[in-house]
Image (cartoon, rainbow, N blue to C red; front, side, top):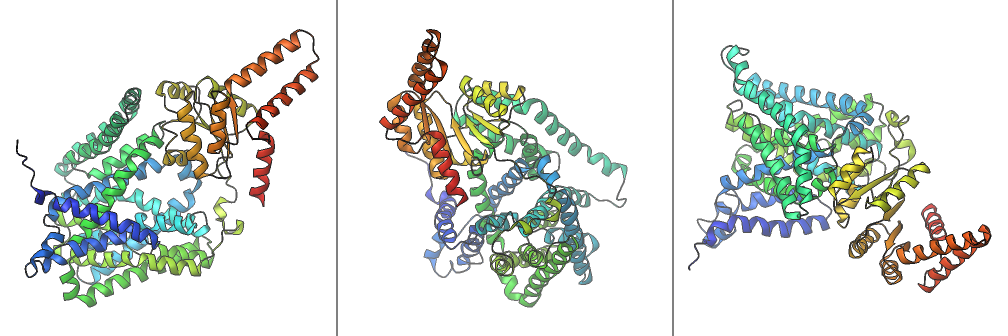
Length: 593
């Protein structure tokens, strides 16, 4: 049977995958955000790049995106997944701890930058509605570029880093209201607030109500049922269904798909499936975001830049200068030191990825004409290309080392989150370990793959997450980076070995205590990097010996001493002469040094 596959139909996808395979490693090696590489690749592969030469040099057509419109439809899911991930990251505790900067500094930044940019657009002849849309689009910075830069520079916990994150967080929250406002502006009639227009909003209200109702009542039971099937493929399919399904419901009611995905993320943020969903969705988000930025680069009107270079370059420089001035002034108003204020201002100077979403919607609805919108998009893209260079400048002007004095004044009375012992496995052994940690007033969090055990723990008020702890991403999301210890209590020798190996690679200094099946299994765990392994057979025999010796009249002190002596002999037999306490103290001394 002959196949009906046409290789040319998949050329665009192959080009994108090849670009991702080349761009990401190179740009990460250069410590530059791969997003800039995707933008540049889009320009090169698009109709204004190699495509403009394909008519003269035919072989260049093999390296040109031929169907940018079809690619753009798929690329829209990149923003959908990004907003879903942002919703998953949000929590009331996070908002409360940074509320002064999020709802103070962030709100003022969006308001003032939007107003200033809109006034500038209005001054050059744009109608009021178009000026507001352009101002809203260019007032938002790039979360996708700035946050990885902060993480690479290890500045996310500095004063400038916290202020920058707070502003970006409010900007992300502001996207949904901006998109809703554009929808209302696009539906305007001769009488802006007519009953007809209000009636047209009913589907959107019902759609949002349906999403909240579904999320509150059915979302958790659905994921719990899927988790009980113990199928990774089915769980991934369920995650994709939640993201895309919520987006489709929102789109069918007249709102954006990104808004529906954001709501779905918020509803999942407080559930036990949060970290596992984040881990499963992350690869799709990264890949689709790369596709989104390639599509942005493809749509970049290079001839327009060559036709109106002074206007576009002047707009880009003016945008960056205006944002720097406003953010610096606001940061000083909120009592940030000058060095931290200029660092935050430089990081937030460029436009962001949502400029393309907002301006695209504004142009589709006729609020902004195509020429003005394309001009603003080109200027926004140029400002995004400048962000890595501005970040390097900010690193030189800002501090290179985070000190206690750098912490924001708002956080002086705020207690940082206490590092928690991570317990993997919440069966009978895990529950007893958690109970003992609680009795000694030690914070802990558990991870479990059995949804029934997770449900039982949640009902008891414990902090337990569903997920596979053998995955590095999941362990890090559960707090492994700051955990004082990891306790693996699973009754699965191979699973325990996998978790110990991954955790030791992530944290060479971490105290790892693991449950072993027998002495041979304990030896393997020690070889993999466990601080201490507790074999069930050995501990059971020692406890039986202790019980019988005490019952027949041997003094308790002698029994306990002999039991400890025998346990030390066992450790020496496994080439582990140090006890758990000794190793823990040694690791503590190394950390202090």
